[in-house]
Image 1 (cartoon, rainbow, N blue to C red):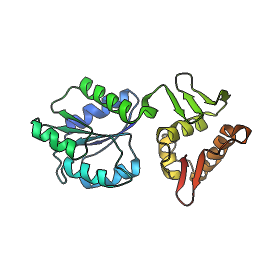
Image 2 (cartoon, rainbow, N blue to C red; image 1 turned 90 degrees about the vertical axis):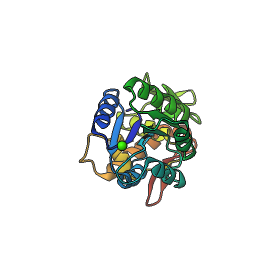
Image 3 (cartoon, protein in one colour; image 1 turned 90 degrees about the horizontal axis):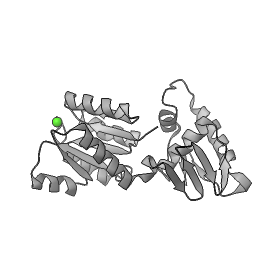
Length: 226
Ligand code: CA
C-alpha cells in the first residue's frame, strides 16, 4: 500500500487525470471538490499528502491551507498547491500560507508525480522508503521482512500491514475505524473488534523478550505507535 493522497479540485479533467494515474501506481486517492467538506474530510482521512487547487467554488485553496496549518491535527500534512496563477507573488502567497510546493496549471503528469515523490521523500520518508526504521524496529519492504534489533519477526499479512501503517506516522493516534479503512481497504464487513485481535497479535509478535511496548492503547480513541 502506497501513500494516501487527498485531492481538492473542482475541474473534472484534472480529477480524472490525477486519480487515474496515481491509482495505477498504487496510491490511494481521495477527492473532494468542495472546500468546506474537504477541510473536514482531510482531518478524518489523515492523508500523506494534499493536492490543493487554489480556485474552488466555495473556499479558496489559500484559506484551506491556512486552516489546515492552524489545526494541530493537520498542520504537518504536506501540501502541493495546484493553480493557474503563475506570478511570483502568487507563489509567495501560497508558500506563506503554508504550502510546501506549487505547480502551475496546465501541468503534465510526469511533473506532478516527480513533485509528489520529492515532497514525500522530504516530509515522509517512512511512507516511501524501501527500508523504514523506527527505534529498533526495521521494515524491509522489498523483502516484506520485519526485524526487532537483529532478530527477524514473523508477522501475518494483516499484522505486517498494521505495523507498516503505524510506522508511517508514529505517535499519531488512529481510531479503530481509521485502521479498518486503511489497513483493511477492501473489507467493508470487518467488525471493529477485529482490529483489537490483530493489534494483540502484533504486540505479542514484536514484544520479543518483554522489550518496551510499542503499540499504545489510547482510551476511547484508538491506538498509536510510540
Ligand atoms: Ca478550480
